[in-house]
Amino acid sequence: TPTHTIPTSAELRPGDAAWLAAHWMPFTGNRQFKADPRLIVAADGAYLIDADGRRVFDGLSGLWCTGLGHGRREIVEAVSRQVATLDYAPAFQFGHPLSFELANRIVEHLPAGLNRVMFTASGSEAADTALKIARAYWRVRGQASKTRLIGRAKGYHGVNFGGVSVGGIVGNRKLFGQGVEADHLPHTQPPAGAFFRGQPPADGAGLYAGAALADELLRLIELHDASTIAAVIVEPMSGSAGVVVPPQGYLQRLRDICTQHDILLIFDEVITGFGRCGAWTGSEAFGVVPDMLTFAKQVTNGVQPLGGVAVRQGIYDAFIDAGGPTYALEFPHGYTYSAHPVACAAGLASMALLQRDNAPERVRALAPVFEAKVHSLRGASPHLLDIRNYGLAAGLTLAPAPGEPLKRPFEVAMRMWAKGFYVRYGGDTVQLAPPFISTEAEIDRLVDALGETLRALD
Ligand code: PLP
Image (tube, rainbow, N blue to C red; front, side, top):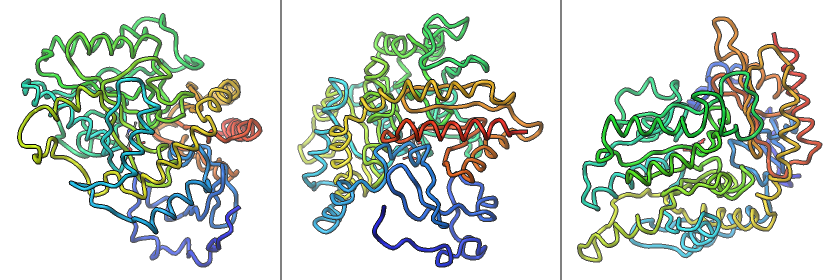
């Protein structure tokens, strides 16, 4: 339990409309929130503590990022020490030791061959950085026509212009007009009512067969020619769209086509990186190695903003070997907060804990329990159309209420919050991603509360 003083709701002045007005909240219904604020003032282990002192089970690990639980002493101490020692170092042309150490620790847990890491401060920056590396890579290799980027319907790669352009969540795209030119593969979400447990089978019916879905890439290659295509970016398992698990054979087929046509394959592992799938990466879980892999979130256990892109050495070498004087910049890209020393300290402590606690194995052990439990919800409501799961992640699809497509998932999340459980809603889905440190009893309580909520849904 935290030992410091937690502000009381009176001190926080929740409900004071004027006080709440100045902060324009991201990805939030501001009117609804400000009429009924849900203020989190502390956190401890698998629990968030709200302004009324309620302990709310953190059923989405923050935003898929705090798998080790909140307030881990080792991370808190590492961050405190680092702030007091070196609070900032210029990110360009000078360095600090932590970023080199962290890059080494990260590479140890990535598939062989992904051994050069460029840091960013977020997942969105990691996605845009990877897309820029892809285009620049072909340019330094003398193939400047290879600029086209291919994403996937329902994909989420953050909110910057590159990521939004290759992303495929319609609501996140349509306000912003022309972005970066991009094409989209079809999504891999099974038809409603499939209720696949874990990874859907390779021989799924019709278009749902994994390899056939990946073959859509051949159609785009035929249309545009591989000489114009720089990269394909997909989440190995998409999270924000409501946990869409790749059918067997899908990722391997994408890999094969990309290799055959000289197209870079990027896995966005911002959610799947560092434990969530019961492996260090989605790449490891699904047995397919990309050319680049982005990460963020769990790398610091959410404690500090940090992301990055790991690339094959050949990609790094293409820039390094491109010539010019040694003082010239090989890749003119970076952020003021790239590899921030305090974020790196959090990253080193988090990576050490993931390893010490053997987080991937813990997730693998809990996953069957979680799977059985979430699938027991089938039939809890006529509005529950599908349940998907993998590792410690699950997505439930709800039928839209007449004329109100987003209302049911919202209502489920709000009723769960009232019962003491935080889950996320997005589009037509409710999402669960409990901390790796959850007990089986906590998972039971989370899913039981969700079942009760679903049964009460109009
Ligand atoms: N990529 C994926 C797959 C994500 O799930 C997210 C965030 O949820 C992002 C990128 C964006 O990360 P950030 O919010 O840190 O910018």
